[in-house]
Image 1 (tube, rainbow, N blue to C red):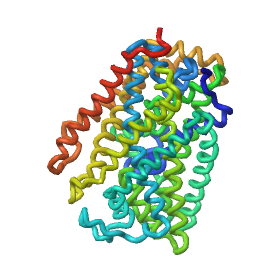
Image 2 (cartoon, rainbow, N blue to C red):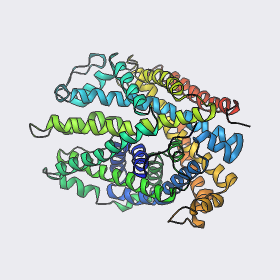
Image 3 (cartoon, rainbow, N blue to C red):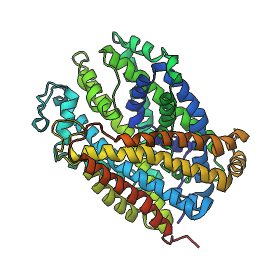
Image 4 (cartoon, one colour):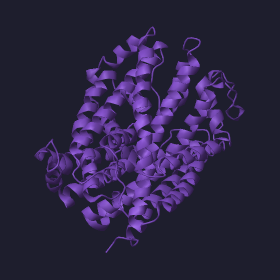
Length: 500
């Protein structure tokens, strides 16, 4: 059966950019910028973009275009069994991320429904002893995650995703051509509103007034390098999968530059939007992604002038939902491509398998059982599992997948060989510097980031863990190891439909 292709270059670029532009761009980057010296964070961020993000995205796009397969099959052709196992590890690790990412999208959808009115008044949550005065967003969020009705939202978001990728590139391209430009327009509307309110300009000045002394701190550079890796969807297999649907003569070097520029520009614009809006009300964005989305921003929007609160609430949560959908469909398409490439399954059968497994996993992350009534950690069983597995799959698994992938492509397949192939069809020619970055600089940087992070594991995930959380940590880690490493070994050992 002929492999699907993108109908237009614009469609591919919107799909790749939509994958990279996700929830993290809108809330995680501003939080990092605030944490790491405001405008000073842009310096290591841009350096990381040039020396880490751009080479890896070109590498992932390049091998996808050359072999026209999903990540596991592509890696098998570049480095044999160990390559395929690396590819499956990346797919399984990103599948864990997909499961809890869709759960978060279900919470976003729940908050979006509430913006019509109820969200702007606090609500009591007796499970945690909350009276409703603690914060509008906070109390509604905890009300959502302790409600079994939220499981219906999880299933709903899964159905939306499956319908979005039902016909592969055909449906994906139609969706991203609408959603990605719309997200840009919505972001500029938020910026305009923030700058036209008293105090908004001061927030902008804080963002662009760098504290250069902070550049001497190692954590700032680690934060920037990690941010670039995550924001460009590296280590997921997404870029390789999307590039596998490109024509053989496509200029993926130019495409990689375009996607990187679009994503990073959107992220920096998001920083402007968040800083201008929140500083209107003297709210500092020093929070995690979850609290930024569900606590801080709703409380900021609630202070808007009468008549605009509901409109901007809908705007913000619609923006979050759109960004999340364009990312989640890319994650699902990556898994579907890996399954169909190896086992030659009908697409409908692969979709059914992914839907069944994925929905079950997402429901676990949405379990509303209260295990921490005092909110010393996360409150519910589902959110606690999400927090723990996010730590392993997102903070460690992505970097590990990217590290091994870079080493295998750089040293086994050959960075110089890849560079020469890509230069044949590109208006921008890669130099020897590309080989040096892929073979030496990037692996060393990722080893440093991973190693320094793992050292902190000895102190534990939580300083004051309630009874039972320790056991959940061990269970979640064991599950992650078996599911990703054990699963990737089994899948790589299985005989594929197209294997000799």
